[in-house]
Amino acid sequence: MPDLTLVLLGAGNSTRFNQDFKKQWMRIKDDPLWLFVAKRFQSFAKFQKIIIVANKKEIEYMKNFASYEFVEGGKERQLSLKNALSKVDTKYTLVSDIARACVQKRVVEDLIANKDKADVVVPYISVNDTVHYRNDFLNRDDIKLIQTPQLSKTKALKKALNSDEIFTDDSTAILKSGGKVHYIKGDKDAAKLTYIDDIRKLPCLQPPSLETFVGFGYDVHPFEEQKDMYLGGVKIDVPYGFKAHSDGDVALHALIDALLGAAGAGDIGELFPDNDNRYKNIDSKLLLEEVCNFLKNVGYQIVNLDITIIAQKPKLSNYKQKMRRAISQITKIPPSRVNIKATTTEKLGFIGKEEGVASKAIASLKYINWAYSEGTK
Image 1: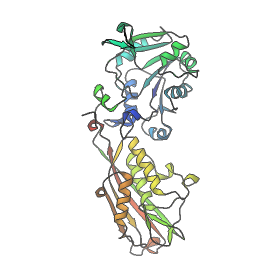
Image 2: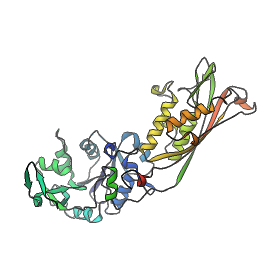
Image 3: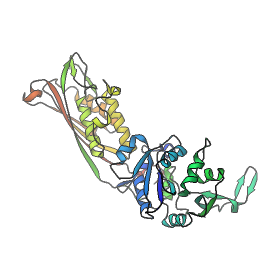
Image 4: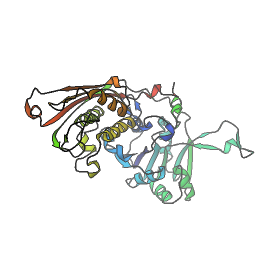
């Protein structure tokens, strides 16, 4: 088995990307970018271990896609890498950024072939233009634009990062700690995806699939006297509410489960457990908002929503349009794509006996089509 670990860094918030989704989650056909990049490296070389450094809130969801080792990222790249290195026990470590998506096989093979020539092997590209710096001209032959991936001797990299100084890449840290650097030719097509218009510089990226994903949700709660009732994000004018850990909004709870189901992201109880005091009597609109933000971050947009509320009481005909508008505002889709239906059980069962309310919901999602985002046209 090769004595080499691959570390892919992708815990950032994509603030400079300036889109409604994180670049790590933009879909390349059906794969999120982080998975596309990992598979690409796997096709180039054999690794004893692959570590993906990610946002803590997204790690459980990422486990649904692949059986890599996932590590929580830090506030800075260097902290993220140190977290990953704590899991590395191979002699060599290959580190790259998920944002550098189109690395070529030739570069990876050259890095591995030169692994014993220094403490770190680094790809670079030359500068073709004249360089003017502080009223003087620099010799462009002396300038190297450093890229990732970089292949390091693991002990040297761990030692180099054991410092309070912040380094922007592995080679700088190793050089500053007294280590040796060996340079190989990089690839101009291996640009880093920082801004949305950088996509045009990355020829290996294909647009996302146009598939639609559908999820179903269901929730039910009994009544509780002397409690405010919230249903579909709207306060209902009755002297009773729902017995529940949160505000008991069965319509929004069913909707949350439908949205999570469409994304394959579990259920409401996994995200907001009823034994967590943070969610005691919480407004379910806040829970729905958090789920919508999560879906957006991981590359989905909502297509439409259909909710059926099953209640013998209270009567809801005067509230349906208010519910439609409230849910539209949270989910950021037009009210025409939010459908609210109300029905009874014809006095059958506990709902018919006016003991509680149930709700069902269906939601459809699709991938955010970054190929048509501003800056990529």
